[in-house]
Amino acid sequence: MKITKMEIYPISVGMNPEYFTSLKSALGPWSVCRYIVIKMYTNEGVIGLGEVPPVMFCSREGQSTITAVIKDYLAPLIIGKDPFNIEEIWKEMDKLVPGSPLAKSPIDIALYDILGKVLNVPICKLLGGIVRERIPLTGVVGYDESINNMIKLGEKWMNQGYKSLRFKIGRGLKKDEELLKAIRKDLGEEVKIRADVNQVYTPDEAVKVVKTLEKYDMEAIEQPVPWYDIKGLSLVNKSSHIPIMPHESLYNIHDAIQLINNDAISLFGLKMYRPGGGLSNALKVRTLSELYDIPCTIISCLELGVSTAASMQFASTIKRLDFACEATGPVALGGDVVKNPIIIKEGYAEVPQGIGIGVELDKDKLKKYSEGIIVCDETLEVKS
Image (cartoon, helix red, strand yellow):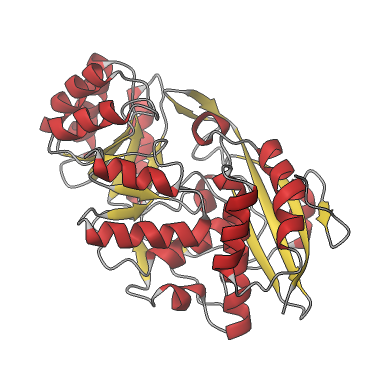
């Protein structure tokens, strides 16, 4: 078997206004979600699907740059290779393109999708086997000038069975505490609360905020300082019993080692593109999580159905899942490109049961949301 062709689809989808017209964070508003979906063809008729959802202000790679890297470098490099030789493909991709981990993520997912389809098993069988069939989920609440609006959205998630919520904060110590105090008063003590700071505090500011929020029984604090400040992240992590979960600081697989060595992490938040590398690098962090006794969970960047299905299959294989996962895209997006999105009910996602990733693309939806198609075949040459 060999890879013969790749199709790249830049996708743009708005949000579901029942949840967000614009998901706001300390970094600013986010109203249109941009994605790259790929179809990887083989000479035996098996097609693998992959996806990556770049958000430039936190991913450092955008839709156009990822598209160019795949088209000009990665696609022509892997065409002709055996999709079962994932490690060889990674060796060649890293040699030719040392960076751009997000561009490699949809390729990796598509390779696993092909393997699952050839072997007639869901990809979770290739990742160590299933530990759970239902994945507990966390709802996401964006920043709003009105605390009451944030509380109402939190209630909306809870009414659907969600027992964990992630709130966007980062508006200063006084406002952040005012929000958390209101959350605990109105939503009660039972719901688990995470706060996502999105990098806006200095280390000293972050320490003060995190220490102040301890009284509100926080489940975790996400990325309180800028992505590059590992020392600052370490300072915050050592200052509080609240688990600190880096996000923007976990860009590639090497960052995982740096975070551990600097005692700058107490919870891994994984995505199918973070640390960049799809399922392959997520597997490596899953192993590090076990070896260093650092729990891990799956978080969401409002992915479409391809990446969400892959992430829930991965979540089903995690031995220790102390923290609920996120699968926000199928609920909070205004559209999707798959025929059969994962089933979410009563605050849980059901692990896809089909072969491979377990979802299929919908041709009409793909046409509706795509901005064209880029075909990469054997006529392409690798750029140097």
